[in-house]
Every structure is written in structure tokens, then in C-alpha cells.
Length: 167
Image 1 (cartoon, rainbow, N blue to C red):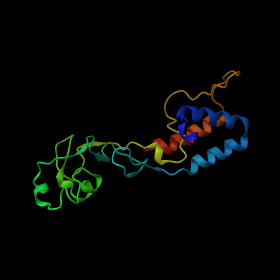
Image 2 (cartoon, rainbow, N blue to C red):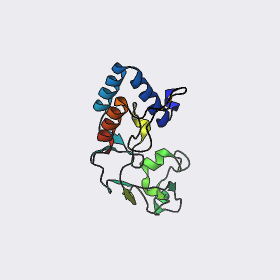
Image 3 (tube, helix red, strand yellow):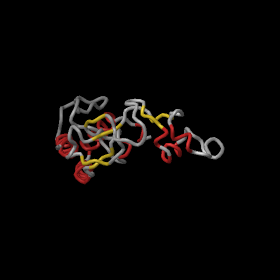
Image 4 (cartoon, rainbow, N blue to C red):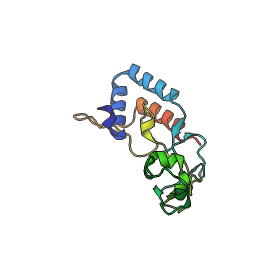
């Protein structure tokens, strides 16, 4: 069930729990301080340091790595069709020169044609509270009036911002 919770809802629950129990707030702050400062890029699938994420840090292909049967390499492989499926993950790894990137039309295992900052993949971090640097973080609890941010939100938001956006 927790895997299906949105980042916004997870923050609301965390803030509500932190308001109710000082021990929970301290534990949440402690966990945030200990969270690794690395993440995995959604584009290039490489680990990166969130504090060193330059505008040109990531090179990747936004397109698909597609089979091109007209490429010369396929004429040099004897077992094709009988023992070897051309359009497979195995052949992409073994014979990258038989595939072409749809985004730039380049052949094979070549450096990415797009260059930008790394983009974090949330699925790779088992405990993530999302990006605290955007939006309104007030907690709305049914039946209670919102009193704005309190110490729990300030501690957690401050630590998360230091952890995720320091560059």
C-alpha cells in the first residue's frame, strides 16, 4: 500500500505524525539527515551526486534503440534466425551495431545525443519524501483547522532542501 501513496499524501501523513509525537519528528529528522546524497538518473540510469548535478551532467538518448535490419553487421552473422533472435535484449547487448537510435539516427552503443541535468528516479530510493522545495506543504487534517507550518515541517523541509537541492 505504501508504494502507491503519492509524494504529496506521504508528506501530509509525515507532517501529521510529526505534529502528534515529538519522538516521531526526531526520528524523521534523523532519517532525513542520514539519507544518501546520491540518486539514480531516470534518463541515463547512472548514480549521481545530487550536490554535483551540473546542467550538462547527463548524456542520454531520449529515443528508442531500434533494430535496423539493413545494417551491414546482420549479413556477417551466420546463426541469425536459427539460434539468434535479431530484435531482442540479448542482441542489443551483443550486437549494438545492428541497432539505431530513433532520436538521432546514430548506430550502436554511442554517447547520448541529449545533454542536461540528471533527473532522480524515485523508485530507486526506498525511503523518499519527494521534493520539498516546491508547492505548499501545509497539512490539512479533516476536522481541524490548519495552523500553518510548525517545527516538524520546518525541520523536515529544511533538511530535505539541504539534502536534495544543494548544488
